[in-house]
Length: 119
Image (tube, rainbow, N blue to C red; front, side, top):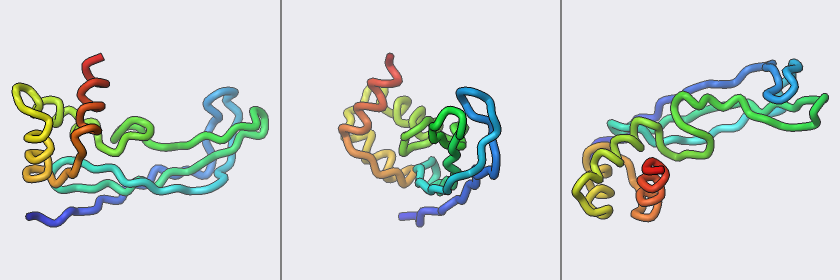
């Protein structure tokens, strides 16, 4: 089995505009999360949390080019899962994703992704 390659992606910014009111907001803190990708890659995304003084709200600068908010898999990986599901069982798709791309996914998570993509 191939070794998982970790690709670091930095999406932090010192100041960005508020998503609600448009005022310039300073960075409050930084966070990291991992997102599984194709071809034995794991993306470690560093993003910043900002605070708006006008709105009294926190929001993130997370880059949604790789994945949507809260997803553990890249958009490309999710598309590949749905594509692999055509005519196969969920269990066989989970095994295929592990062997070919190094993505470990449970049957219930795969089912949720396929259901969400069908809507």
